[in-house]
Length: 314
Image (cartoon, rainbow, N blue to C red; front, side):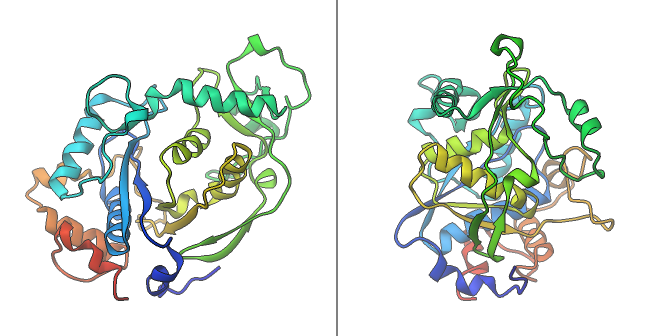
């Protein structure tokens, strides 16, 4: 794994030639904070510097935690910051004729069709296991991923017993190149085991929905935080099984963390951009603070129109 922070100089040679697509995909489960701003800086900065376009997607698959007020707030924050998506309205993701971002909550039919395709290949099975069941079967440290042991894989659980579905994950080694970290490899079966794609409440999971969405949106480059790096191999394997042939590149950037090493999170109520705005912070100063803490720049202010300069010419 490459650790040197000179990775920006290699971007012109590693990104797709000509026009390409990336996406900014927040989940409306809370207000945006500086960690989200770091991601936005990378997404818009790299796209603006190297000929990419930005798709806005609202990842609201978790109906128990997503709230309309959070979505309205994040759209307002993006406008205030000056981050305007190039593809805001995606016709195939509309639930009606109103103009709005692509939302996962509108896509049951699309996800269902993808699940049917995997089922036709014999890759899907019902699973009655809860998170507590798995934790008891597979002891693991706090924050460590618990590997599903395959309890229901061959148990012939009746399909009507549960909405939950898992996809069989093979034991192959998935090799890929990260635009910042270099050559990497993962074994999804050893990491997390068979993949939960729909939970017992009939909600589609993040791991499944983003793969289907990235195919539907013709996404070429996924730019996200290092916390999602372990998901890459399983998502690439799943995409291949769904018939993806369009090459997909990844860039996993550093995260903002607390002194104890924990990442900034909505769940821990880290100071939101809205609170910082209310306290008098300007967009230019918040952008500069995020860039400084991400190791991208040490300027005191930066305008959104200038974020490309954080990546171009390095």
